[in-house]
Length: 278
Image (cartoon, rainbow, N blue to C red; front, side):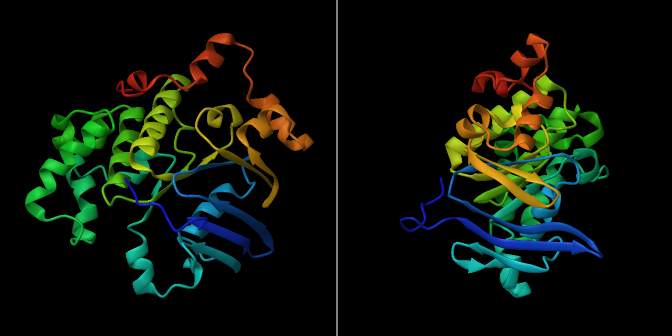
């Protein structure tokens, strides 16, 4: 469990973040605050700037202007050495685990690679036991450590990606469309797993999705993005019960499947169901 920050200090405070690619303005002054252990869902259509926001915050792409304060320090201005250390605290789970997991590496190698890069985290004699512990934590078997990514289902591969993200004991995990490629029932299982990890470990999440119903049972707050701008932000209840913008209402309508079986599958299952291997 992570220790709480000083009273009232946010984990992450983003101010007026801007990013352009040539003449295209991908982010237009985005601002929000994330508290420790909180989940902020970022939703919007394709091209709304959600993934650009994630990449800018983790400095996979450099923002043009603005600030992102991590516990009061502007991570966008950090020198490379400080940023290297900070990366242990901020991890990312990508949309497609088939692309983010090296097919030539076993699960054990994929997870333990984090300690190759940051050897101060865990002595090598403890690697095997910790990999097995992480696999159990995400609902997989320790015996899976010697298998390769192609030997797993899509839901299982995403669990491996989550285990890898947990290896450095981060305080924030950014999930960039991490369940969008999965079947609806598997989406609910993975989200239940993330919610369990948040409650047990105190991890904060930025959860990016294009489908609003997916985030209803997991997020604390929702930020709605359109054309690179934050057009509405509020608690889950505010966004779902009294949205203020027509764009938000359209997103809600688009995500509500008339089939009651699909609606039931979207609802986050109990933790026990969430740990079934999918």
